[in-house]
Structure formats: structure tokens, C-alpha cells
Image (cartoon, rainbow, N blue to C red; front, side):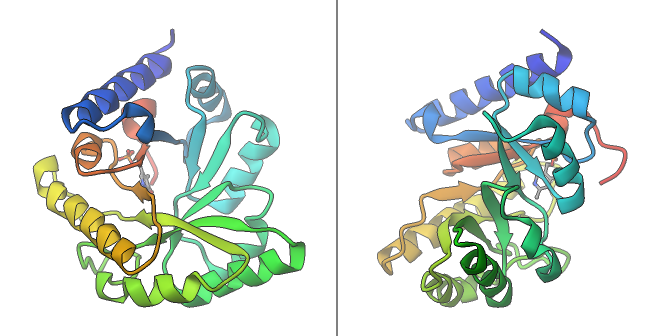
Length: 229
Ligand SMILES: *Cc1c(COP(=O)(O)O)cnc(C)c1O
């Protein structure tokens, strides 16, 4: 096994242990290997090492990689901010968009989907830490947004996503992950089924799994530190 493949095995084992700690079935947590800025050969190693979901931030970069690696046996997730003028490219590339944070963006995805008779699975990104530097809808506006989006026929909301402010100590991220889960649970009582929680990155995914993550987005713990963001 290569270094990358060893690290994937380690991350999966840590996910399993964190899930077990909370009596959650480990299959309920899926690893999104964040492959942004990573070269094709290293991504291929990851796929051969069991990374079946890849997370990318930029459309153009993802498109180039998907052309080479294909979509057979690989799911591609868009985890980065999506601009409205790029929406037309997402169909045929991505299986899930994690970063829908406004009604305008959702309407554009819906519009493009209707033109192509396609449907897109999405997550609503919530700015759970009220961080000025982060995208996402305010938690207070999540119900409004979920309600509006759920009426759009060519979108399917699967859950919520959050990127909390960065803390060195994962225990400081934990309350944000708890808050996202509680927001989801509350939205469920309002009639919206949102099974997926995309939360947790390299330095804090175990805390996120303990708090209910179903998708963890892990980059540098698999591929090593990135030089560029
Ligand atoms: C880059 C990125 C990640 C992965 O970050 P690491 O700290 O390398 O695991 C996760 N989520 C999003 C939205 C990202 O942009």
C-alpha cells in the first residue's frame, strides 16, 4: 500500500472508532476525499485505495480530472462555493453539491436542471459559526431557505453542510457540529427530511462524527498539506 492508501485506511479506522463510540453504524459515515489541487496520479492511488467519493472545490479543475478519471465507480462532490454563472457546468459532473447557500443559487440550479430534464442532489450550507469569512446561510434563515428550495422540482435537498471557524483544538469545533445537528433535528420536526450532515475536516472529523456527521470532508490528512488552497 502507498502512503496515501495507508492514510485512507487510518482515516476510515478513526471514523469507525468515533462512530462506534456513539453507537452509530460506521456505514452511516462516508468519507469524502478532498482532492482539490492534488495531481491525477495521486488521486488515482486514492481511488484504488478505496476513496470512492472525491471532493473538489473548483468546476474547471474538477472537469479536467473527471475527463481523465471518469465517473464510473467514483462519486464527485462539489464542496466549494458555487457561482451562479458556473451552474450550467455542474450537471454531468457532480453527484452532490454541498454548497447551496442562497435561494438565487438554488433557483439557477433548478432552472438549468429543468432545461436538461435532470435533478441535482444538494446540501444547504449553513454558516453555523456566524463567521464573516465563511459562506452559508445564517442558521436563523435555514428554515426559510429549506422551505423555498423544497418546492423546486429539479433539486433534492439531502441535508446540511457547515464549515465552522478554524480552531486548532477540535473540541472548540464540536459545539458548532452539535449546533448543526440540532438545527437539522429541528428542521425535521418542521417536516423536512435531511438525513445528511456534511461536517468535519482533517483536524476535527472525529469530533464531527461523534456529533452526527454522515459525510466528512478530509483532504490534507490523506494527501498531505496543500501548498495552495
Ligand atoms: C479544502 C476543504 C476541505 C478539506 O480540508 P482539510 O483540512 O485538508 O481536510 C474540506 N471542506 C472544504 C469545504 C474544503 O474547501
